[in-house]
Image (cartoon, rainbow, N blue to C red):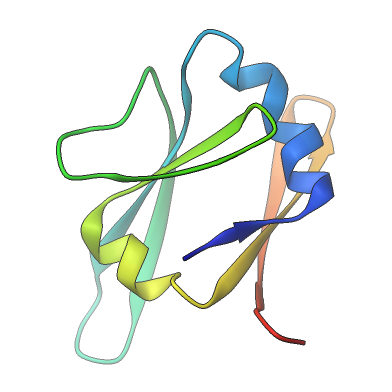
Length: 91
């Protein structure tokens, strides 16, 4: 299951205060590539996997949950925007 770094938790916690979070959706780009779309969400959609840690929440559609199952989400806040990165688990 996707994990969150300490930095991701700190960056995401303020947008999750009212029960919302970020929703990651996998967009099929062909057999070998997929794009991940990120949106703020009031809550999970039906079928979403919810990853929660210390007040930070991420909602993953089933395809994104499968793609990111062995990853760690890292987030850096830069004023009014975020930079997202994924790191392999176990490194």
